[in-house]
Image 1 (tube, rainbow, N blue to C red):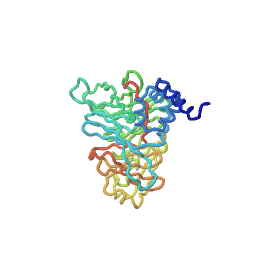
Image 2 (image 1 turned 90 degrees about the horizontal axis):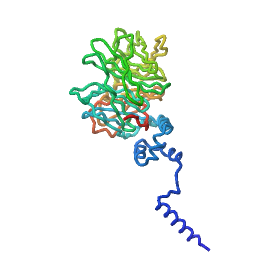
Image 3 (image 1 turned 180 degrees about the horizontal axis):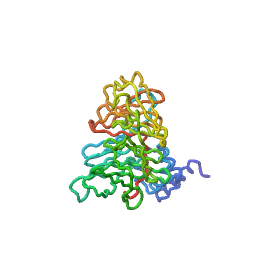
Image 4 (image 1 turned 120 degrees about the vertical axis):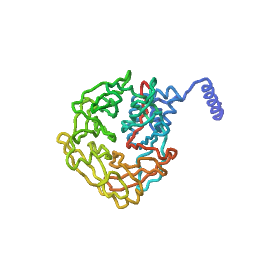
Length: 399
């Protein structure tokens, strides 16, 4: 008769023997591994991808990356991009805070890549960022304007092919858009010189990337401070033209149209105003009577495009709370963006220590300030802040 103790010892020795022989009797199902990975932060996902071929195959599956992106959209982050020592750096920090007097939050470093000069940065779309920059390409002595696509979550980046142009020493601007129907990312770029503009489009896809020339019946080009916003597959940006207009570009059909801005809504085109997505509508925000927000500001004005075809706008005024001046202090603030939860986000042009981000709730009429730590080494660098950034663990093909 074998005792219970002896049975346990024999079972233990058998298990150890199988493990030493390379056998694993405790295999974890792939679906369970996938569920565990969905709960890990993006940096852990990167490590897991490198530790095991099986794990990498699970993480690289389309169904996994789609689910991870969907979960990430429920926990949006602030993305900070800045240029220092001929490199572009990417940091992010949690966006949502529960109370009005939020404690400091620590930013996370993601990646960097070399550039000579940053021309502009497009708002992130589903985790991807388009950086317009100057680089000295192979075989050239002087820098040229190029666009670099990067995914801060995976640390990948690649530079798009240089555009071919008939212009001599042209200037160039590029915008980043997404077609939710065909699920395609596209870059719209304009080269202009001597009041003439060429428009080109590149689709991000597998295989060789190339620019296609497209026609535009209205000669125009974006202003130097023009930002862009992509809403439901339509890209909007402010233009320099004889009339006050906003250009709209349908990412799927690759067709242009133009929105005239008249009367009191001309403020929507001021250089310091920012085009935003307000509940699915194109809108613009600025402080009442000023170009930038400060402790002297008492209210803000929002212009919302209610009907695109009729070019009808509405004006909304929001009174800032009595605590505004005390919370803002000596900061001079441009409007960054508005979050999906209708909070206007403001931060200064340059990093300083301490560095604060301000959140004004349009629904509650409250103002809160959050200190962002972890970027003190880059104090005085120009910072580009973005809201509602999501982490996408999908690797870019062909990089």
